Image (cartoon, rainbow, N blue to C red):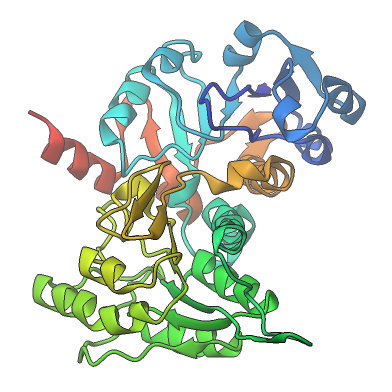
Length: 378
């Protein structure tokens, strides 16, 4: 069987799903690895580097006609029509955000494995693409804030006087949030972290940040997968209100709160933005699914009463070399798990396969995706 990595067609995508360092491990499973010409160019990887690693460089048409297709972003409807019937597609397919597209994939008869649906179990840690990409996003979000904030992050003592450190608040203490906390701390800022999950409190404190305490009187809000649950409307509104005075004292606010398959929860109201000092920065990592700030616009910078609000939707692509390496490791681990003697073997008895498989044998087989398709059908 052939496994191909193709060049991303999305204008803001620069990553690739296979890198030279994972080619040998894939070849050992019996697969022939093929790469679309110039597919790794934006990540600083030449065609020659792939050839030296044991891959074959081919045309775009040949790559899309492979038996297994490794993608970074979900294919467009036009690209789905180019996929070989009854092949295997592995990638960040956004099945919970665009469920109808999964029906299109199913109609091609492909077996589609969504990397974002990999279960959070110990055996699947090496396949956790979301965590790998979230960590990069958290890191880059802090650098964006630091480069645009009109003051220093660290305490600075000079002969002319002392500059106080910046106050940074991170909302959401998942992988992206914790990486943002750690990065802001390394840059010398005073950092606070907030999350509705009780388990996040100690994680925030372990990184040297202070935990934002809100009088919400809620139970533990972590689900079985380790993600935050959605608050009821009244509690959600109260949370937004209680955050205002704390955000008013923050020079930088980075929001990372996401609920899989749902609109991002609102955490930063217009009132909170207006309470912040002019020159303050908000970086909203939930911009793709509506944003944690009510004023966020995806992939734009909004300015409201002197506060700049950034809504980046693909920060990992801004560091494509390392992002491609980390992502390719997770994809290679996923594919290798189900390839035996050069053949891909579907296995619904395996927890990882069952959790990640969206389409198989002409049908959408993932229950949650199916329910979303039914709820959004006319």
